Length: 274
Image (spheres, rainbow, N blue to C red):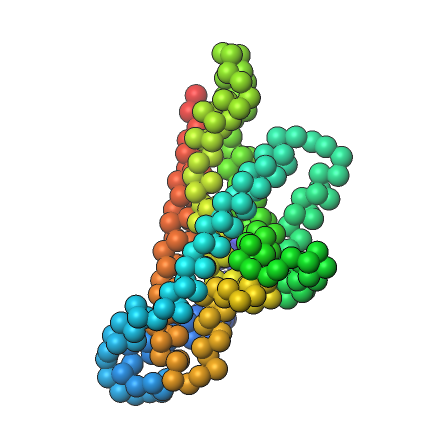
């Protein structure tokens, strides 16, 4: 008898609890695309009819398109910066042993455990004290601090499964450290790097609190959506836009998970080969 079966016998209501938990958590999200096709401006049942006019109206909204462009710029920049910094941190933690290593790793991961609004207010105070004008640059810097822990979490698993003898063989054949990293290390950990880029981009695209405090007069898409929620007539368009963002986030996270599992299988096969 497996351990899971034993626990289910002790806690017979656990599956029902888990099902109710996920229903409570995800049912409102599943209702979002349903109401986005409603012909009426109110989110009530029964639906008035089926329409796609709310999606069509998004194409002519110049303010929304500018906010979407801002989010795209911020997301690309944050994913690149976070992944580069995550590569450096993951390589140092998995390859070397040094004094204060655990403390350094804990400090890097600290934004995951601190309340995000506290991080946002702290960064805002630092930016204002330095006399820096709030813009997309400050949003990029703030979100990079928040996304580096996610990038490092993904990249550590990629570096931990890497066989260091491959690098040693490259050095023995006369390759430089930079050439070894570019030709040997990067191709092996490439799936983890792509996963990190996708995960951090998705987090940056959906992030609101840091963008709200640091964006100034250049709002990102979540900040724009929050501003539109104050007007009842704008709600259907917001639901349509939210559905598009939801689908995009699910697709990117699914792709990142596929790449991560593929890299994990490749690593396991490398260890099992004679």
